[in-house]
Image (cartoon, rainbow, N blue to C red; front, side, top):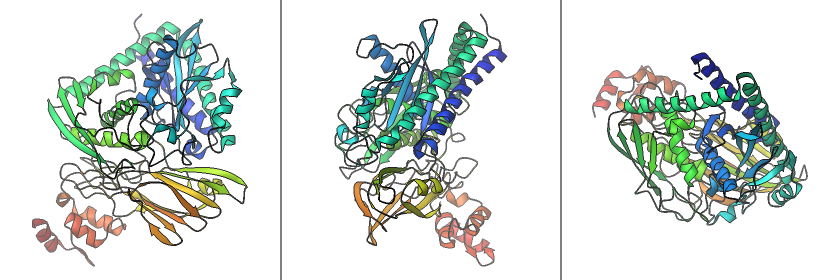
Length: 577
């Protein structure tokens, strides 16, 4: 059978729409603001043979592209060799084990086989960030964990739903090991509902076009994605491009971790060599293999966004030499910072290398931190415990033709900060500030975007605050002469006295009482190109909008602004040096 172009295009769009509807169902039905409002989740369709990615929702986190492919493949392999019970119709597996194709423990994955004529046609899988999974601190972000057990409950693949019914014993085990367990049922039901919606939509596609036609379309879409990625790579100049990116610290040892990357472009293949990166670390900034691979994949998605999401897009990417580095974590290394922080440093290293080969397609470094802030305590007015999880955006890097986006989502996803109004309704907090962080964008011909400045006050009760962020020591890298963006800052005001974490943006279990405040400034994006080549009129506009002061305009861009506007003569002298 030969597919015509129209049928192929319609099936591709239908598969994509199926995943998008799963994403929407998950968010709309979930209880937790981090899923319902921030959209920290993803849904996809995967091969029954090897778990290869067929399609993923456009509104899901890109970092889960490779992760769910890896975890689905692992489940298939474990079923095949008898380590996991074989599936029956209506079964849904739950897993969050980082070392079995995961991220950190809070990212909980469901996987459900879709049956046709008594055989598994494909797998549907999704991931949702649960606000708490147990462990040493509320929210799971233990900044000084030295073993994964300190980070929370670790689940191998087990059947949470059997023949369509939730297993009460497995559910009881989960609830007995996490905080605010009574709220998890809403997220669990939403996560399962999303898979069932996906199955219904998939059945409609199969019934309309026939199983064989859809199978042929899936194979052709994978082939074309690989072909398109190879075509993009072939257009790059052959050569080897090197870069480095740095993690502030691992939260335990106050010393930077290095990601050393060499990218070799030869023909239609890119080879990513991470040898020379730091060894496995004591704290939670290790990255498991699936997350590291997915970080490279998502970086390439940023560079070539027109390539359809499919396992084929990854085929021309050869990733090697992770063994013996903190980018290939094994049990019992702690990993809570891998998906949210280390993944973004990996992507930054890819950007810094490939901007040399494709300066018109690659940006300077974005903020590169999810801004993980967890607050857990008891609300005396409501008589119940809570775990609040705050993520935040930052500036994107400038590029060859545009300034960077301000307060954009993290590099790894589409997650956004939950609305302030929702957070204040759900938790005993008051947002005293929520604004662009002026001056944080790195200087360049195209400047970086601006980060976010926010301050939260605890209104009542007592709580414990934990942070696993990054870019507090090194700002996001500028590109091709551009300057770095501003670093991340965290200040906790207890009894009116400021406290800065020793690891700058990592610390756990800080006790707070009513009236105490947390102030955060997220990073700005890196600048692109020589700042002295920036159009002075654009600098004047930015000063007029309050983005930079006159002093910053002179210091960062060499533009002198007086009461009457740009002083052309002084600007020319300053720029000449």
